[in-house]
Image (cartoon, rainbow, N blue to C red; front, side, top):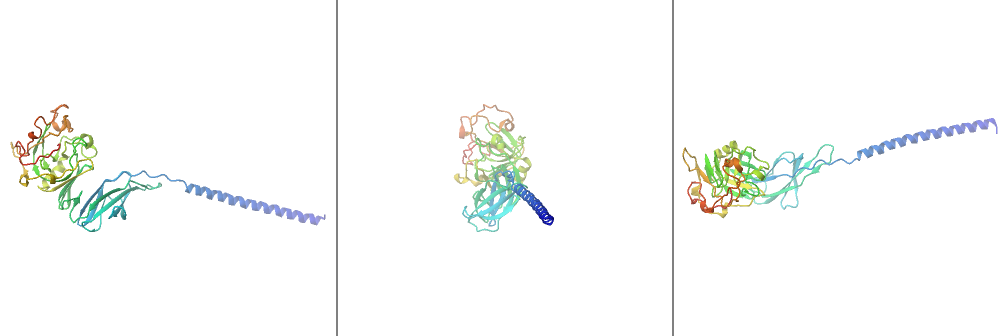
Length: 366
């Protein structure tokens, strides 16, 4: 082989090697880029954690002016709420997504039943949105206020046992919204249903089987005047929350003094009172005869016993009142008995006369 041929072959070999090195280098770079892209895709595909699930919502519906007004308490872990409307409770249309605690619909058809569904959600940054359990309630659309199926007009008191809240509206204006303590759950439940303001007294002297206490304001709401709203200075543990489950009243609605004064100063005889809640038995004044001439407002002077309000106690348990020594002044022991032999015959009316002639007997605890 001549020298020229050998040189040519060497040049070709060298060119081949250089080409191979170049191609190999390019492939390596592409592979590196591919690895980087796959890695990025894997990072983007990391599964996010779910945001904490919101608690259930306590939904309250009202209707007036041909509209439905929905209000609710803030739910733990909820960053917002989705509201839906239905005419049949099956097919829902979206109303609004909001972080407020109330909503008023446009005008609807009066007399029609509507369903409102609320779904709380939690959309924390960097986490998957979590949805709480839907809450659904229905109401008949009305030109006046309707609560729990009762039309109450534009002046009324609403006592919500589940929320432990009293709201008093006068001429469509919210006058009082306050936490309260109702009857001890399972022992002295405050009855639910439709009532009216029947008796008013300031001050008032509440006398029961194991208590004898003075209050500044009394607003009786049932026929026998042994269920009512009153101030309760002995309640040092506050109001609202779950107090009523273990340390509730004997059936009345214990109310802070300042709120009770506002209610007393603005309410009048005959104002509707709706007591709602899932843990109490239903009661309606429709089941009892009533003489409206017994409705009155009493303001007692010095030495006047007309504001003495007696409680029967014939249906109490044989153990001491769940309101304890705070309300009853520590004047009884845990073994004190209620009612005695007289039972219903020992009942006294709000006017202080034996027998309670002005009232039909209402079989309940105070």
